Length: 507
Image (cartoon, rainbow, N blue to C red):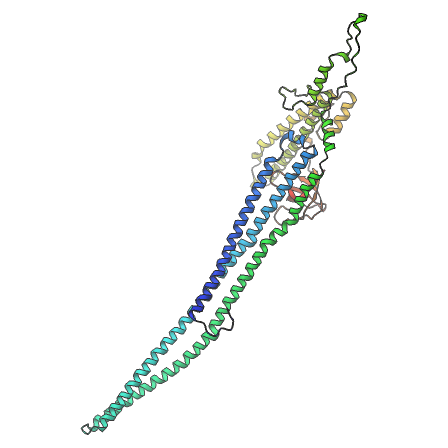
């Protein structure tokens, strides 16, 4: 389209109509393309999350295996891949909101604007055509009246030259000719005035009105092109913005492979499975020629069977049926380790149950002060169940601590248990006090359950979240419950929720 429009035919108007419509169709086509791209990203992210979930370790057996660096590294890789999937979801979300939604709204505005401009152009063309038809009608009327005037004048001259015509006939013919001539002059003046008016309208139409309308269409089309170009750039920029985090995920995967220590894993396996039995002594020579009876020392009690027993104990399958609950079927060292591991697991479960009980009691207090938020009695079944669970766990803890005391023996028992079960709520010497002091363990002070470091900057804009910066040290107040969020405490005292994938736990 040219801004200095001198003359536009109907064909040219159709060209502009088709061109602007083609531009709008391109915008609509690009929106559809981006939508399909977001669907691919979402499907890809979903499959990645399913894959990581499928191969993630679960249960106590897997937790034991994760003590080996090669197992732990694989879990780190799965965690990084899960974070990577989150970034693909973020790409899809930003493309949908930043490109599809915005361009769709922009497209609707363009359609309405184009319709208005084309309607104005059509109306202007119709007005000009109507004015031209009126001019043509006036011109024809002028031609007709002028012909009638000439005919009347000729008739008057003929009557005047007729010798048989009376004076009255001559006068009447002259008056008729004069009237016709006067009417023709009026039509001539009307035609001249309308012609002058039409020429002005035509000049305004082609030099002012239509150029203005088409210039608006041109501006609209250029704005469409510019906005579409921005959408093209956004397609790339949205993915570029998450590349640093994606790179960190990939670096984390490489780091997971690099931190594997095969020697350490071997030593850990040896430490976990050493039996604690002494090596068999030398087999004594029994001289039957001297008539001496065979020796009955422990060193000669069928060494091959003893060696076979120790090998069997070292590589015993963990799924062996009928295993004793106190692990008495295991060698001494293995029994102590298994009992200590069981105590640690129960201690963790007990701490979690105590936290849950405390949370329920606080919630009950809130309901009692604000009845509109909920019914306090509705929490009683959960509180009762949690209390019973705590009692059960404490009983289990006392039982395993007693068995560990038997396995360790003497003064070493008290020291070992005190060092390893300081969070368990009791000691071996006083197992009954575990139950009597249950009601005194709740307080209003909430202690951090760990520390973490922010890997990325996060802007906490929604309610309940807080903002963190990369490298910031944070205290973990509530671990991830499986929804991807954790509650942390900043050094400034500010507390709120952040994405779990944005921080790294400090061991």
